[in-house]
Length: 190
Image 1: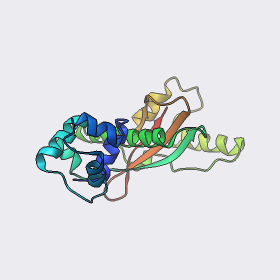
Image 2: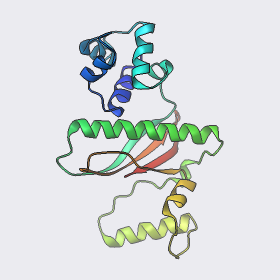
Image 3: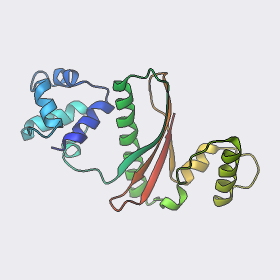
Image 4: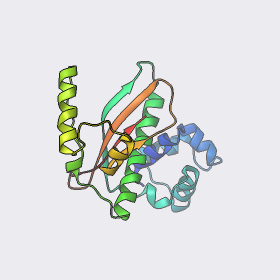
């Protein structure tokens, strides 16, 4: 079992160890689940199957390494967002972006990392305007108003995701990388 993946799936579903143990009807304890997540023990095939079912995934999803790695690059939140909610959001964003990239790949719609803008530190309005102008030029957007920003972003492999989250969460940006370290997708989340 891939312990970090189990933890990620559990957190994305908003479940504590106790809640997942309860959803399993006492099949395993909170302590056993903790051991699975930290690689200290391995569940039987039957137990792994029941854990997967409780999380709404296939058993193989608890075993394999994801094809992409997601890195969170920018986070807007209020200071009083709980650590539990932050971990849930981060796990959910990672899983959602992985799924989008997987679908994109299966449909033959992969965008190269050349479409994904490099992370730029902006410290002033002038720098923000210069970065926007450079991106408009690179993407050949012209100077007119953009009628559908979401469509422009999604056409370039930058997924716009909306998630249910605490009101103390404002947004997050993430980039997905393939096994060779090439950017294969990105997301902005609100």
